[in-house]
Amino acid sequence: MAIEEGKKAPAFKLADANGKTVTLADFAGKDLVLYFYPKDDTPGCTKEACGFRDFWKEIQKLGAVVVGVSPDSGASHQKFQAKYKLPFALLSDPDKKMMTAYGAFGEKMMYGKKVTGIIRSTVWIGPDGKVKKHWARVPKAEAHPEKVLEALKGNG
Image 1 (cartoon, rainbow, N blue to C red):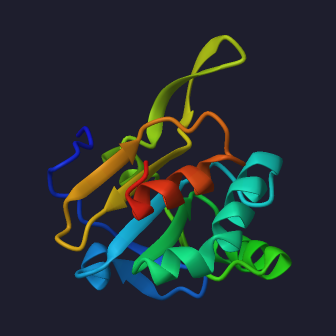
Image 2 (cartoon, rainbow, N blue to C red; image 1 turned 135 degrees about the vertical axis):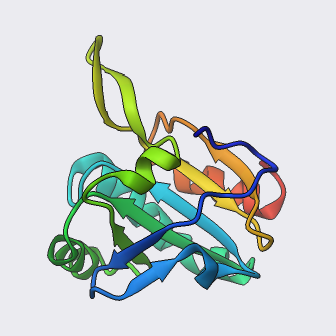
């Protein structure tokens, strides 16, 4: 299923780093920035996570919440959060069902070859549960959090 701006976001139910169940319904009435990344504590993923961390206060002032999603385990997420002082939830999607529903898992080009894997992408879901913006492929992980912040401010 393709993610479409203006359409309802697919429901999800995943565990956070502490094993607590988190669902899309938990964020009703808030702007939710769901970002999908391949792996905890790798260079690009760390830059992206730290970018969201650095803009966290500004993002919160705009009434939005950031949540990261990868196939990593809760234990891996806990280490990643502690090491970089990440103030937002990281969800585990080990079977990649949610990632597939959100277009964040599938065919992509890597080093000139077609491979199946995690597609770095972000979905902004509005307070009404509808997709406001979909960054289907994030080319520069380190620059992306600022682009999301600008979009939340209405400048992107």
